[in-house]
Length: 480
Ligand SMILES: Nc1ncnc2c1ncn2[C@@H]1O[C@H](COP(=O)(O)OP(=O)(O)OP(=O)(O)O)[C@@H](O)[C@H]1O
Ligand SMILES: [Mg+2]
Ligand SMILES: [Mg+2]
Image 1 (tube, rainbow, N blue to C red):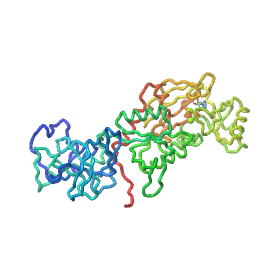
Image 2: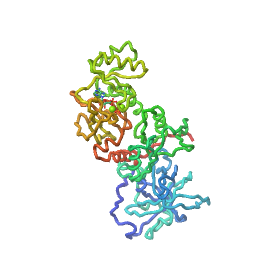
Image 3: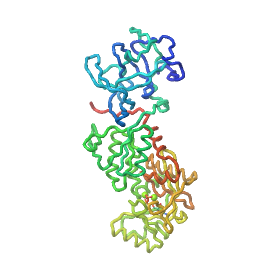
Image 4: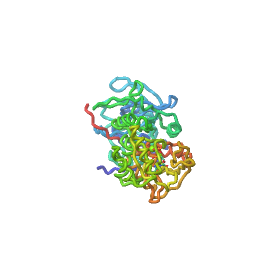
């Protein structure tokens, strides 16, 4: 461990422009590029070079044509290829640079604050991905201010920093607000998709909507990829899955592929798969000891009576396993009615479960929107006159709701049970407390934003930024 002080850069301190004492620079110095999330780098001072350069890889442009950005990755510690800092910056220019070995290369030019000791000033940097450079950063003449004097025989004349900072929690706190490249996996141009694009762009990110069913995949051990329309998709910082119920198997396969590549997916494939199938979902809830209406499932028609007995007396709910929008949910008032619904479903070869009817919910359910580990909004949905189902698609209405601690805890626990960072958890208010009905992995955003009169999508981006911006990525070691 080094005994250097990482907090020595004080933004309030006089800058080089303020003109203070002479700064002595050796041929190698410790510097920081805080705008890029690189607090400590060893850099070679080279007065033979005009422009400064940063050794980067996976260099890729993105964003609008009139304000292009560049994304790239940096190994800040030489020899430590497992430590990767993802960066992005505005492109301020393109320049042909001839390096010391005489090779010319067209490079992107970006701007960043350079920190040395207590001083900070803006510099221009070109990005180059030439392999085998001993130094990961080169400081050229243009970046050197008048009050800097070079002592070519010495090194580390300025305060030393330490690479330990890359393993500290302050990396997360001090991470720059870099623009992210985000994909929304969706086939629909609806309110939710539009809001995700609008809000992301408002925060400076680039948000692309991708039709999940048009993604195709190269599945292999060395270099798994996702392709789209004849091209390999870029490396996204985050993927927001909005997988419709009709394409769950293929949609989750695409997400699995992104997970394999190492892309952060707001909701994981396993959680989406488990929450989509009501039988599977209730088993997950049960394993996590989350309260739900008594539920039973049987395979054989011989067990219809036994199934009904497990749940108790009529009225009963019979539900298709893949129901959405309340379309496959039936209330059977008597045991006899339950038996005939069950035999009708069996005749259609449909999979269903039988569930205790929570009468006291009185046609209302509570939708809690969970983002990260918070319930960010809740609404009470009331069914249309005479309907026990509260679904908005069945004519129900919604209004913002205050929830109890028990309800909040149940919603958070349920979302966590499926590992979902964005979830719509539906609860029934029963006389025994909240009972979880289901967990939706692509919750509609229109109803909840309108009922709560809150910008909920903004909270989703806060969560995504927290997850992907700062954390240095640890790469899987791949065979060369
Ligand atoms: N066991 C139950 N007791 C009382 N009401 C119920 C019960 N199960 C479902 N309901 C009512 O029926 C509605 C639809 O049920 P559920 O949410 O399980 O179906 P769904 O088709 O998955 O709907 P969606 O996914 O669109 O919300 C619920 O919102 C609730 O109002
Ligand atoms: Mg549902
Ligand atoms: Mg529901």
